[in-house]
Length: 358
Image 1 (cartoon, rainbow, N blue to C red):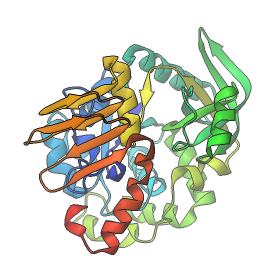
Image 2: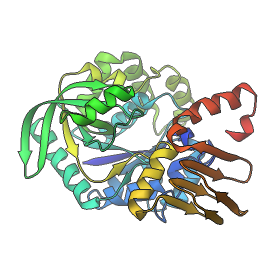
Image 3: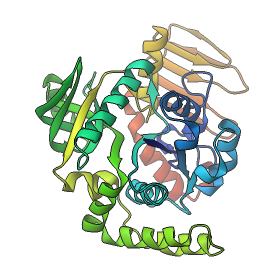
Image 4: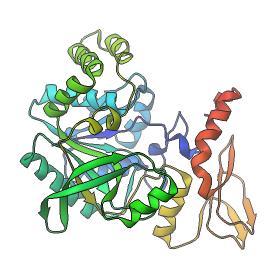
């Protein structure tokens, strides 16, 4: 099995730390290594370096080389610009299929936090076993929810199909987009619903046939790109044809349109640290503290706060549920329960023409 680490996202909801020039997967947000390095090292325990590919943008290659010098240059799959993960997943699947037409692969986001590495690897091995037994299926790894999160998509399980120890595989009844608070609470109370982690396992030949059926524009464009790989026209064809793909997600474009899907519930201490609020929750659990501090800080009577300082001292008194992130050119102060609204803040920066802060 191959692995494809998706490292082209910009992680804008962790602004102002995560920027277009250095997105969150390049940062040490939880441990002492960048999230990308943590992702690579986890799967490298199971899959050899030569079989791990990095899907990213050209502008991030030099940063990634410094983080992962062991990855060979031919294992970089480059998008000329972002068009949604349906396109990037199709391109990666096509390239792997050209290398090995019987290939299977696990697709992993580069910016997730996973606390129980051994349990994660057990789950990945089980997903590979399920794919060998049911090669026409797409296997996804869901996450047992721990809170009524309205910022994540959900998967509703249906019938149990396989079991191995405490690992189970279910057919999928439906995918549910980000719910409101009331629905999220109902999903948490029900055994049927899992968080959609964005981790998928499939045979490349099978998923390419689904692209041909459901996203033919993307399939045709990627086919032309693949033909040009290794020629002197590779980059010009890539830019021209990639502009023709369907700009959508793998969930909307493929996953929700096929019935041959299985989900494996994962229980390995997962977080997507997509927003400051979830990063606080993850760090608070690790350190068993309601005050998370990085950098120069002094405080009195603060509760459920996170302070990410840079050069100057940050002093706080009597704060509750506040996130403070200081960078050389921007300072964020927000309620940790409203950190999803950073997306709106970035739109406001664009409206005001303050692109230098993005």
